[in-house]
Image 1 (cartoon, rainbow, N blue to C red):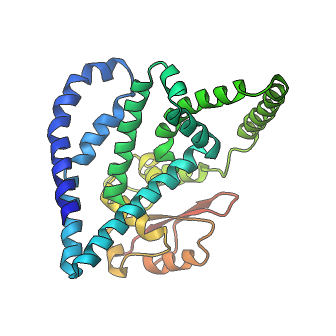
Image 2: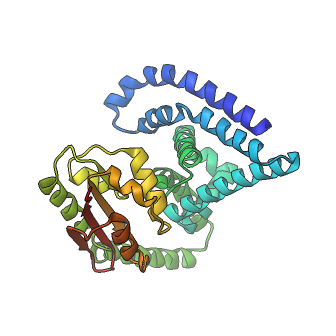
Amino acid sequence: MLFTLVAGVVTLLLVLSLPALSGKISAVSHDGGQLLGPLSYLQTNLQGLGQVIVDKGNLIEEHVFDHNARNMGTKSMIAILIMMLVVKLVSAMGYISLIFSMVSGFTSRIRHSITGINVITGFMLINLLVLAVVLASKTFLTPRYAMTLALLISLVAAFGMADFFRAQSSKWRQRGKVLLIVILSYMFLDGLISTGASKSYLRESGEWLQQNAPSGARLFSNEESIYYYSGRNVDQNILMFAFNETRFSRLPPVGEALLYDYIAIKIGRKQKGFEQEVIAWAGSQPIHQAGNERGAKLLIFKVKK
């Protein structure tokens, strides 16, 4: 497939060029904080990504014999990944920031008035490429992953909003100021009062596991914070496998539970009836459970051999 070949070549060139580039900026990254962190993360994730893309392309070729169907399948896969990226980015930054950033980007007068626009654009491209790598390799993305890119885009959106208000009459500018004060005040108060559902039950469960389970015990969990609070290293393969299965209220085959010593499963508030399925899969009642006021739970099991 043409897409497979091109993607593999581009990825290989990026992998070969990134080590030299990251070496040149390592001193800057050390002194300048974490601004260049995404580049190091990108270099790590690009290792082997070309082979993953080639394998997926070969899989399509192996099971789909019609040439037109293969091309349609490849285009559909790319379209779905792009849609996922756009949706998560919009969720992270909001429609207002997106609209004004587009105004700033497509209006040459505003674009040329922004000092350091090339630097901002460069960091945007790095973050966009990182998100694309994560999405292509994991087929999974959450809005918080796109938060850094959303903040960079919001910087550009501010110039578009300022230009919009300058173009209005003095009467409408005054009304706009009042409206902005009301909106910002609401957002500030909402941030102080409404902090969302409590996550303290995750920390409590992780600390409980640290105190009551041996450090070398094998853990199967779909929640990354449990590994952190229990003082264990995260096995990304196990974590992503567990998360991808349980987020759709699915579980691995029954026998796989015996491969682990402890099981810690987070159950969302909308996963009705999934708790009983988890208990049946684990083969015992939970030895610890905790939850929040919204109905989310975390169950910990000790696997009986």
